[in-house]
Amino acid sequence: MTAQTQAQDPDTGLAVEITGLTKSFGSLQVLRGIDLAVRPGEVVCIIGPSGSGKSTLLRCVNLLEEPNGGTVRVHGTELTHPDVDIDAARRQIGMVFQSFNLFAHLNVLNNLTVAQRKVLRRGQAEAEQVARANLAKVGLAEKAGAMPAQLSGGQQQRVAIARALSMDPKVMLFDEPTSALDPELVGDVLGVMRQLADEGMTMLVVTHEMQFARDVADRVLFMDGGVVVEEGPAAQVIGDPQHERTKSFLSRVLYPTHQGPSD
Amino acid sequence: MALSKRKRSQVIRGVQYAVLVIVVVLLALVANWGQIRRAFFNLSAAGEQFPEIISTALVNTIIYTALGFAFGLVVGLVLALMRLSSVGPYRWIATVYIEFFRGVPALLVFIAFGYGVPLAFQARFDNYTTVMLSLGLVGSAYMAETIRAGIQAVPKGQLEAARSLGMSRGRTMVTIVIPQAFRIILPPLTNELILLTKDSSLIYLLGLARDEYELAKFGREGLNTTGSLTPILLAGLCYLIITIPLSLLSRRLERRTGGRKVSSPESTGLEVSA
Image: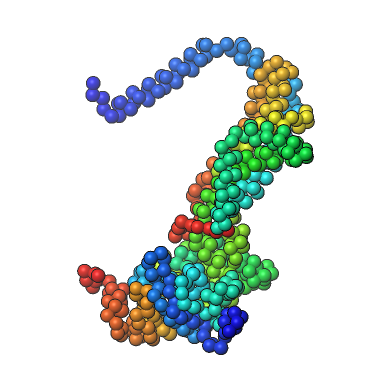
């Protein structure tokens, strides 16, 4: 098989296909062989205790972290292939961070247009039109001229979602998008994500919001110690977990007051 | 004698004021005020300095400094990026360059440039070019370290966001990191500009024609022709016309960037490879 056919192999029809993914930081092995297949339009929530590797897994999907082994394919393009143009591949993958990461020196509109113009080579008018449409979608059309520092955390995160959407991604990655937010601001962000899921966006979401996972996810993965311990429909994994580790994690997350001496 | 804490601090403050008053009075008594007035406040000598001290000397000082600063900024940026490069030799070259020009007196650099370059390359630049090169080289070494610190102060999340949108390393540097870095380092960079303004007084070593004089040289010429120190005082005041607004600006910028730093709750340490 030539490099070209290895890199371009669209016949699986999967949005994201991960096989045998491993990742270590120094001597610490964070991912110990992850396999995951996500169909187009599917919403997959990844839950698990901190340090379980769920954020690292997500960051491996757009190669913000370089995996040590295994393959990552997104819509047929093998990102882990050495010949692949990673910048081009990332254009199809939107990412939303826990800490928003809006460009601090640009106003909201320019946050949304800068990559469209510099990466997708869209003209100013077109980029602005796309940006305004996406701002309206997240309910912040009137904030186009604001600087990030003038917005609340919830507003910043919705702008960040709009920024990612402005690149017309095929897959969206959410890395604990509501963990840095005040509780009363979480709902707006989850509302936008819910709407996105309803529109058929393929989404991978690392989250601690169990209610959101239960309502929106087609599938839930429970990770612990760098492996996927349990996966299945949301109602099953969250409502009726099979594994001991899943049960103990969920009992701690869902009923924190009943927490025992902890492990 | 057991003084209360408050009492004691009052006494200490009183002593400080007393010392100040005594020193001032002593100096006032010792100084020869007539001589001082004749040397520094000679009106006819002062009159002779105008308008050239403004139209030639002050303007030239500003031009030389601006040229040196602009060139130094470009070289400094390149050096900063070299310092952060993943290519070893670039880092080493930049480090050697920075250590050399920071460790050597600017005076020597100017002599080396004024006399060495024409010898070494059989080429003589005009004075403006020589000034730009030598002031710029000295300034760039200082600015490089400032710029590097600024680049490293940009939160890592900004890079990750840019890369996740499909921007290349270079594009991320140019569009996202460097603009924010300059915002962060605007106050220290303004201070570099003040230092460079004063360093521009050393370029008399290059041998200047009368219409190329900057403030320090012009003041010394005035001293020679009038025999009065008044031109020196005037030249000094002219430097302050440049440097005090700059230092006020620097302080204002400092307050602004200090109050509203790059917004990201998670600002981690950062390794950039440019």
